[in-house]
Length: 116
Image 1 (cartoon, helix red, strand yellow):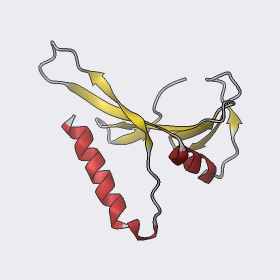
Image 2 (tube, helix red, strand yellow):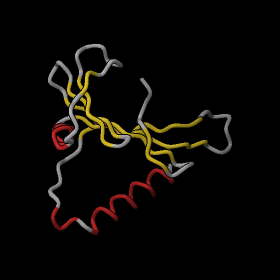
Image 3 (spheres, rainbow, N blue to C red):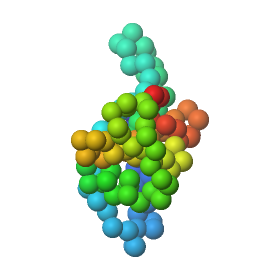
Image 4 (cartoon, rainbow, N blue to C red):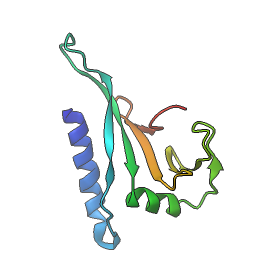
């Protein structure tokens, strides 16, 4: 858990270095950690985490991606998704915006938040 907090603090600090021209939007969403956290494990196996955003921040991100939206077969409900690297932002038929991405702490890489 300390690795997650350290990573998030580093991200926040690095973003603040160039924050003079930025307009921030409050974030609604959740963080889900990956790994084995069973009681029998002496060393917690933290592999990474996924960020899931929704609301106004997800809408702004979705609209800022210039790529054309494509039908997302994973949802099968008419949801359209735009991709920017490993981040994906979607707009559902219920008029809900969402974005998600994953951070692999073992390899220090950004990845998709979840598979289809």
